[in-house]
Length: 279
Image (cartoon, rainbow, N blue to C red; front, side, top):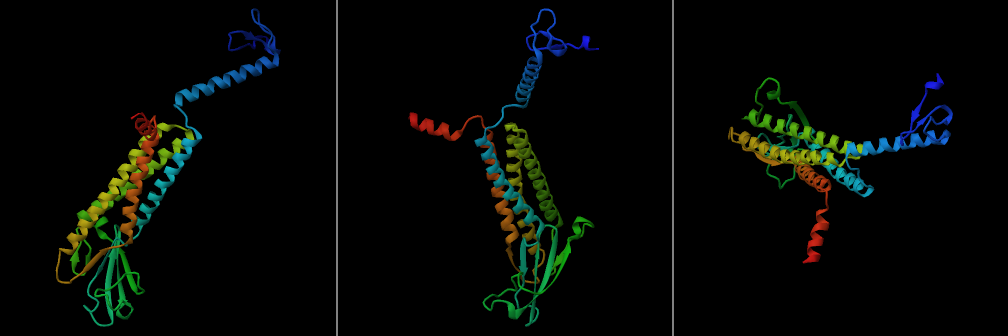
């Protein structure tokens, strides 16, 4: 059995069991076998590096992690804004119903809430009911136009389900692009492949742009909601959830631009400084 066991080293020489070289080769021994294994390991490592693409230095990896932290902040703000219902606050005059209580409402992409406040808790200089953060009895319900297709009615005004559904779908698609960008950056850091920075930058930039478009569509839905009936005068203002969404969109675009700059084969800052020095 051992007589048929032969190993060929990198120079084409055949080594038998115990390091005895075959005719035409020199004795190698245990050191020859170990050197053969190390050579093969180095060859495989070189092949993996060549097939996977150029690696990244420690400085470049640190820059990618910093840009990834910026993008993660935008993702967190986006998720926080999407999950809350403080996109817009609607408040009639505080003495419209009676002199003791007043009714205010606020809603987001998925559900709306009505809240009964005490007039005595409201700022005397404020003419409308609110803000919604004051203590009171609240009632929250999910919008039915996602399930049954029915519009919501608040203060005798009717929502425009087409605009509300469009804003919600844009937000979900933006969230999907954010997840894809996070996956690309994770693969770039784990596999040390700079190529994944390019699709990640595209995902984050498109996601931030869709977030801003979502705000525009939602604001148009609010204006259409207010124009549906003029029986009850309402004061409306965009709340803190919209601020989170707007900041998330700007941060995601900045993060995408940073990833795009890091994916370039050269440093644009050094090239600009070099041109200024030569001029």
